[in-house]
Image 1 (cartoon, rainbow, N blue to C red):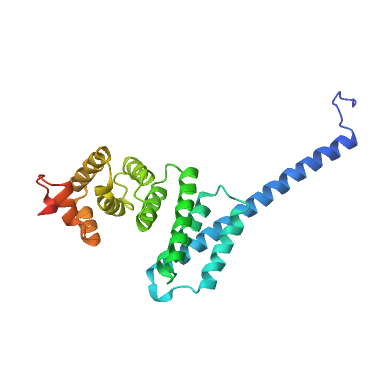
Image 2: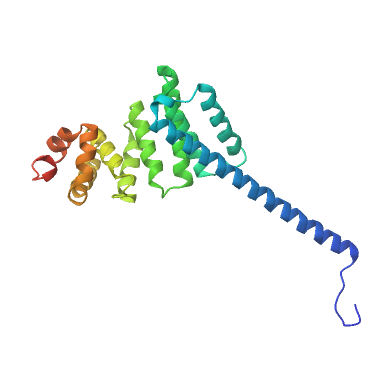
Length: 231
């Protein structure tokens, strides 16, 4: 006890406390640095993919693509639950599958890798509509019009029925896969599409025109309905 009655820690206890504090600070510094690097990697990857997609004449070499893939995988080794990194990984596989003159076998493998990646994205971020939409697109490309595809579509239209950035692609996918759905799912998707056609007519018209799916929509889904979209 000191003269004022305040306990004074022994020197050994002070050193232990200081070591614990330093250890915690080091862990926080390493974590922050890793998070910063993860952000840089995912940002560079998405930026590169956006650039490649907007400029088909500037496709990357296989080595450039592989380098980007290796960077993402390296960060995922330390941060596997980072949904943005997982999304970047899936996008890279999806891009190569359809844009780098791969063999049919390689493209199929890449689509499968992308599907696996988007499943992980959905598991990590279940309220994010893009995960479901991207999963749907990949499954359409490989012809997997199965229960997972149906459930993902139904979840997407419930989660984000009129999200500005996903509406056009959601309409395209919904109309494309509609014939392969079971009767109950068809009814749910039909209700969504008819309501969307009223609330977002212009966007629906553009989506159907871009995808050349207007005839299917008007003849199969909106049949018997006085839809201005079909005039």
